[in-house]
Amino acid sequence: MKIFQIAGFLGSGKTTALIKIAKELTNRGERIAIIVNDIGEVAVDGKIIEDYGLDAKEIASGCICCQVSGSFAETLSIIHDSFNPDIVIVEPTGVAAPNIVKDVADSIKSNELIKVQHAPILTIVDSSRIELLLKAVKRLVEKQIKEADIIGINKIDISNEDLITSTEKFVKNLNPQSRIIRISAKTGDGLSEIVEEILNGH
Amino acid sequence: MRIKQLTNIKDKEAHREIDGLGKFGIKLVFQSNNQRSKKEILYFINQLLLRISEKCFAQGADLIGHIKIHLETSAGHIGASLVQFNEEANITGDFDEIKDINITKLTLNVIVHGIWDSAVAEESKIAIEEVCKETNLGFKYEN
Image (tube, rainbow over all chains, first blue to last red; front, side):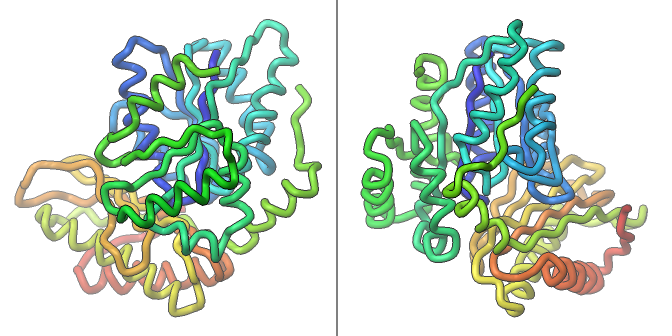
């Protein structure tokens, strides 16, 4: 069972990207499961995902990397035992730390029957409002970028070239090893490259 | 099963930024005679997102995390989100242009930076009540 995590701050476009990536993986014959985590008491993302004919397990009322990590590990175990998909797509809250989510997923390895692999971690960065984000939540955004294997510079359909280029430079400086891909979760641009990474990446 | 906790100082530091986020979520059920056109429904959604953001910013919010809506109607579902102050909402899902669409249920999730949860809740409820009154939509909050 391979786990693919879509990280990124609130409003970066995670849910929109998840829907398109999930559909493409399904079209390629992969059996997928989806876990979405909402920090708020009332979850919306799962409903939106289900409107697209996809089934999502929702974990609400806290962040899976710290507040409700037990629920996340338990959900992964249940999904494995009941469905055993090829890929579990995980959308943590916009404030989650990617490496901790990965560690929590690894904790289910204590059951020797479960083999967990990780696809590259994708962090989505909203190029259209990067300056605002760095003023308000700099450490969190930087952490999400540093812990990514792939960084999707999103909203290239509405952002301008200067902002996109400066976001790429900023990201590269923070995480030189990452692969940077320009994407538009809305139009689907760049998402096929991410799907290739999920299927063939480490 | 042993679950990893936040033990690293840097993890804790970065995660402390969650404290700066004000959150609120609620469900609304509409009265059965709330029939509107598609155009009127889209206007209602846009007005609600805009009004909530305006009220939160007036109280000191400086960044929208997201303001998300999921609306259930007799003609299908609509998702809408606003992430940038003073910009248009992103609306997903669609339904055909039918004259009388019955609005049944709305789920709202608001996360903004810079004000407390209680302020987000208060401002969001004021915005809901104002916009529903202006558009003549009868509703009640669902527990």
